[in-house]
Image 1 (cartoon, rainbow, N blue to C red):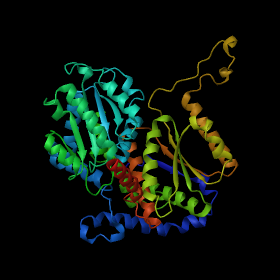
Image 2: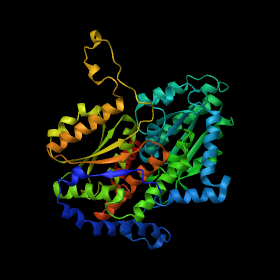
Image 3: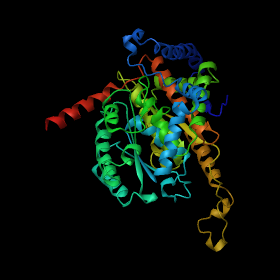
Image 4: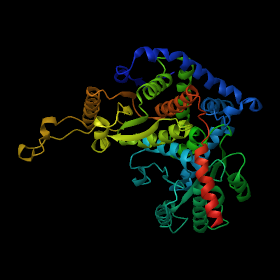
Length: 470
């Protein structure tokens, strides 16, 4: 089992009573056992206690179940069908529009930005190796962005032209989420207009990902879509990145979804078996919890070093906010990108209110060849960069990382580090599963049900009532 991810919190631990950290270990072990027991409860739905409803713990063992199913059933397995669908869309389209909101798009976007070329959509088809461009909509009600996407797709004039062809992936567990449903109707009409309403493409280039029951499932059956993928009942939206919600877009992008799932499996095994002090999930949860409860650090900064993990941070913002922001509890999550945001938020982090725990998310090895600062003639050295000529951009980022942490330590601002050796599917699988497990663990630790999002439902009900009465 790989232990690629490291969690290091020495700088933070130095600012808290170590005895309190050690004393938390029994409560962490108890909460971990409760999380594991929650999995077993899914086998007997009628026995689930009322206070644990909803119980969406199916995400924990799902990666292993999918890999086992693939090994046992081969081409008939869900993973193989997802991979086959992805190959079909790769061969038939130049662009894929993925419709979804919240957990129905944020995990896929995180994988896209972390693991694909940073300018993927700008590359030629050849340089993309015929992998489609991907766009995300249905996650807002912004007339200008929807109109712009329609204009972009409608630049293509001929279904016979490979670069004009596009398809839809629509993701909604219930099919009743208004933002996604409205976008689906608009873009479905555009797709039917482009290919012809009764064309084969209208059935094989629209792929719904939805629950086993609901509005989108019913419509998909009526429309006769050739491929529809399930979202398990026992997996909530923000925990769904390892269902077809995240796996199908990832596979369309040419990512190795089996390697992604194996990373999640390895992190789950580590969570289950390793002790406090050698367990990223337990250790991360312990530090986050103690700094909130003992020192009032109610703002959790996820400081990503480099832009490729910003979408991962935004995915985590939703995960933490919707899971633990209940009963007037729950830390406030905020993602920043450094060094960019050192020039905006850095002043506040250095000298502002002492309510922040900063967790650095750092990748040790870039995915491309390090670029060095060129040396120039002295008459062109007005920027005085010849002093660091030969140093690489990763060297500069490392210096910024060390310098920032040192500055925070000097004024007793707590920091901790999540260290990734590099970015690939296996590492991302570990990271996403680590965050999901830690969030659920903390919920059980503070007696909050980490599943469900009753506060979000309130705005949905009000919006629907206003719209349908007006």
